[in-house]
Length: 84
Image (cartoon, rainbow, N blue to C red; front, side, top):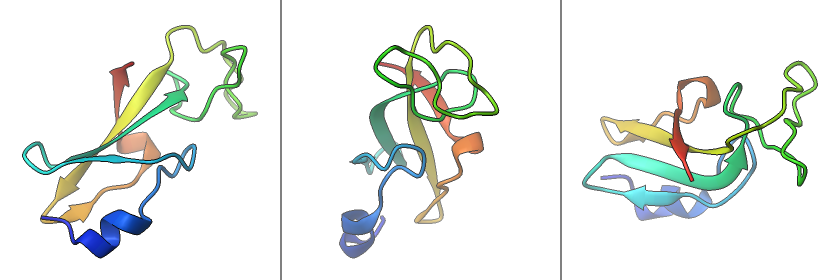
C-alpha cells in the first residue's frame, strides 16, 4: 500500500495531471490525453506536443503506472497505454 502522503503529491510525469490510485490493481492511472506513440500530452487538435515525436495523436490514450513493492514506477516509457 502506497502511503497517503505520497499519493497526495504524486502527479503524472507526462501531463502533470491527477492520478487515480487502484490499491487492488497496484496501479496509478492518469486519464489525461496522451500520444499513443510516446505517451506525452497531445494538444486540443490531437497532435503530440513532444517535438521529437510530433505524430498525429489519432486515438489518444491514458497512462497507467504500476506499483512494485509499494513504490510507484513513474516512468513514462514504462507506463501502460490505456484507451480512454
